[in-house]
Image (cartoon, rainbow, N blue to C red; front, side, top):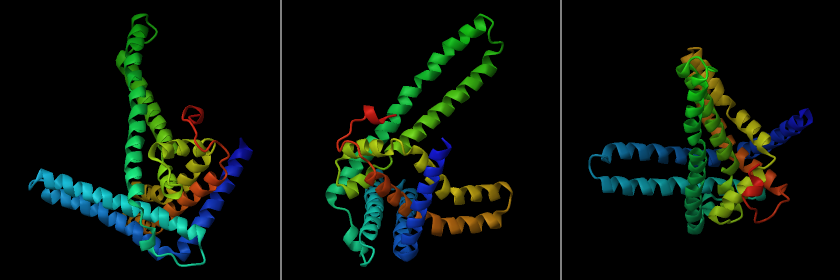
Length: 275
């Protein structure tokens, strides 16, 4: 186990070093795309606030437009990073990395599959609360449990914690699907299955990478808890301008690394890659 953690740490270090090298060389173009995503999301929220009482039809239309625009920029960012990784010597124009219409449609369909997977796991785990309730009542009846209310709260908290953990693991396992659509032009459901396949056995590495990338936000929360608002503000600004672009590159580099090491089936099934 210790050797596995060491190998995972070294792998994460390699990803971070490679990502930092790319980000440092092409910072302004990568940061510009990240900023455009932020502006699009903010403009969408602002527009929804102003036109919500004017016309619901117009509000829905504008929401669809902003969703398409946001996803287009997001896919362009990944495609741009792929070009930087594959052709580091030559300059790459952002305009040349716009996703095709087919890729956008496949991404939207795959996103629906992604949401469906999350909801499906939630539906599977939700009945656990109803199973625990009669069990707990029986334990109270036979005298094994003294307080139904206190024990019920604890069991509910445990069940909710398990559900959140299961949803997080599911999200992490299938969140690489956009890369397959952009990099391999994979079909929507195929991209979900491939994401499950390549993350099998790499969960610890991906989790460590997310912890490293999320370190800036954790430090920001720490300074907030310590009631140091100015320091927290500075950390948040640095995190927004450095960690966000670096994270996008690091996740793309991590995908390329674990995908290149994948030796499984080109058309994997779900059941053999869940665990």
